[in-house]
Image (cartoon, rainbow, N blue to C red; front, side, top):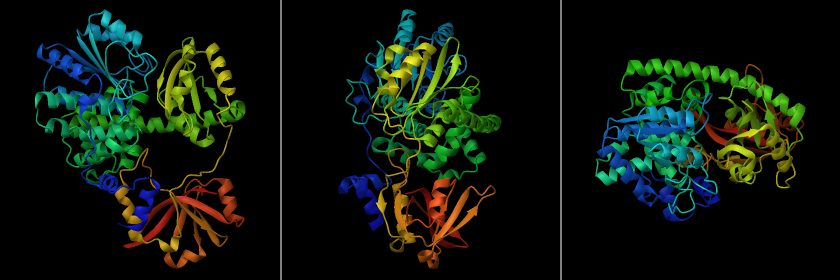
Length: 538
């Protein structure tokens, strides 16, 4: 095994021979019996009873990429068993996240007899009772952190207290897939019924930023392979129009290209556009849908830029001293606040909540730094919320203005949230000497893919003295390229996109610097050179 690859694996505590073989394998084996999920046996029994008796079934999901892919997976598999099936996604701007009585009333009017939630429902105790009181059965499939109480119905969620499923970090689409897989096994259906949705499953898993370890790594590896031969016309059209090679789609392509376009449907209009695309059997229809989705994403990007600027100005003027800023934006586009909260969180290195008016209350989306568990934090003050849900990294809630003041006061009084505006990156995989690294070493790191949460691209530290030449690059000169005299003979260069002024000053003032970055291969005129993409300078 390549020495650099072995050192990275060691740094991530992947040292056992069997674990290394599984992690690097093209055909990983880590996957688990769906019936190990608590409630799965009862859920399959209830679902098959509904199918056998031609009862109308509704798949009810969330309006992000995880919800869109979750619905698409179950619709693909279950529609081979029944025609009496539909789906529903609440409208973000009129109904909000999760189960709500307005949506339930519409579903009741459609004569539905079984509702299956995907990627939502674990907090919907009152709504489930409302559904049951109308004589409708409910199966909850979700992956969000349960509260102290869960709905009084069949619940499939690996995070619930009485579930012994070996892997707890499935995305919502992963839990939905497990339900489909259990049905396939119970009925002895051909495995193609399941294999054909692995590509959609991989997109939802990467897109929801769950840990790409254990079973999720298996899901994504097989899913990317399935993507190359996908039978989903809408997915083919989207990938082609985004300029991607369908035979070489990486997890990064899903994160930065495919997922934002699927999310744009729910952020800007209606997430049903995304489901229609993934279920489409017509290339003409798919092209029309992709046209609209690309336009929505372009609109989303423009609004996002403006909102980020507005939120940052508000932060600096009113909230800069807060440990956990709760920033009220009266005219913010609700569909964009989540992604802006994530960007602002990275800029100021604090957990962030962005709030917009919602009748008499405020509706919020929040994102956490690595050291804060949002759901656990907010759950301590559950009595203050009208509605709250989420997990470690992200949460959404509805709260009255008076209660927000109380929440903010309580959180600001805590000791375990550091009041830090700008910290340097301290975590890296290895310290290396660039003279000891070859092109083959860097290329061996490709075996670590797919990259994502829990398996990020390895970060390396290189120590440089003050022998550095800097060149500004890009139209607006926001990026720099620099070389160290010791490495010029090898053509090795360092590139730092969106360089921080403080870091540029360190280089210009001839500091001895520790460079933190990602190793990359830059090919020019058929010659390969090692390049480091700089992430921070210590």
